[in-house]
Length: 118
Image 1 (tube, rainbow, N blue to C red):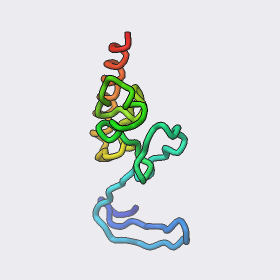
Image 2: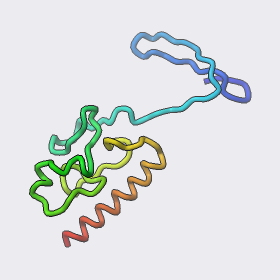
Image 3: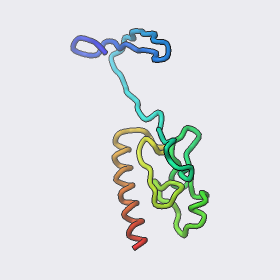
Image 4: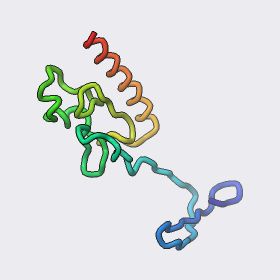
């Protein structure tokens, strides 16, 4: 990125070919979270076709939920008591404010599950 007192241009690089090009632009938006990196999770935690973790009503028919007397909470995965929040969650809006709010909601969900089991 370069410019005088404000952004004027960016240099883009194709990491496969090494080709570089300059693009004149007054602004840049950086998007992260395009790849969820969830391949390490056990298969019991269901994900969508892109690897993002399914939660809430999308997992109600998962085997572990069929045996449960509860319905999954909005951030609960296909395994009761396991929560997903932020960019890794299927259907999330992939924005900073949403990630922090979902994290707080997940903590509240965990606390409710712990209180119900004691």
